[in-house]
Amino acid sequence: MQILRTVAELRRWSRKQRGGGKRVGLVPTMGALHAGHGSLIRAAAASCGSVAVSIFVNPTQFGPSEDYARYPRTFDADCALAEAAGASAVFAPSVEELYPSGAATFVEVEALSQRLDGKSRPGHFRGVATVVAKLLIAAEPDRAFFGQKDAAQVAVLRRMVSDLRLGTEIVVCPIVREADGLALSSRNIYLSPAERLQALTLSRTVRQVEALAAGGERRAAALIEAARQTFAVEPEIRVDYIELVDWATLEPVETAAPGSLFAIAAWVGATRLIDNTVLS
Ligand code: AMP
Image 1 (cartoon, rainbow, N blue to C red):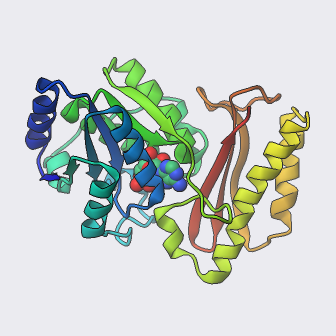
Image 2 (image 1 turned 180 degrees about the horizontal axis):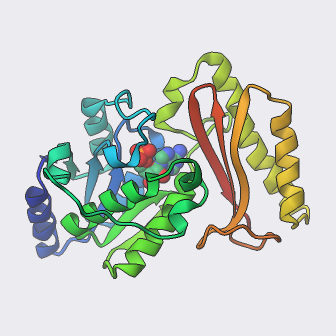
């Protein structure tokens, strides 16, 4: 597996793969790789002859009081996981490589970037859209793989790829969970044992809402109220949002329809966690 450090190296690598008749897959990550990332890399390797995993803790998507400095960085273990899952290259640039001195160009996906996580994390999706645009322009992948875990991010990036007419197909992979339901996240390591238990409220609520919807409850207000009641008995958890939205626009819906996104964000101690389900 090759380690690429510059945009020029990534572009050269990608063009060589395509020149050799291979389809190129890209899996953008911030490192601290876990089995959720592994599932994306395996999905990429299953449909693309050459897969690059980018590992870059992107400063522009973190707010000033967020965890950029202490975000886990585990490069050697990440490379081992990426290679075992089928990656042929890791792209791990420096901050200066992706944001040259004086960088003043950003990608803003209007409206969508203000919804769900964008509401409580101003500038977050601007940072995400900007870095993913840079990666897609550099790597020119046929397909890029993202997790449904970050469902709002998927909506923002689909819009961006469509608006900018980038030639990459966005592939969305299912949420990978621990045996007890907790969605895997690089931030789960911040949780104390007590918080780890409290964090199960998110996945429990997702399952509860799935069951209510499967039982015929379609009213958004009823689904959201049921979810709020589940959180009400966990006073240590502070809900950021509980919403039922159209997955493409992230606008709230009144009635659940197939494809509606039910999404939760909540603070467990100092750790912000998210979870969601797409209703069938
Ligand atoms: P991150 O490193 O947190 O930026 O995540 C990189 C990619 O992995 C994103 O597309 C995430 O949605 C995806 N991802 C993170 N956690 C999971 C999970 N538990 N299951 C599936 N995909 C995930």
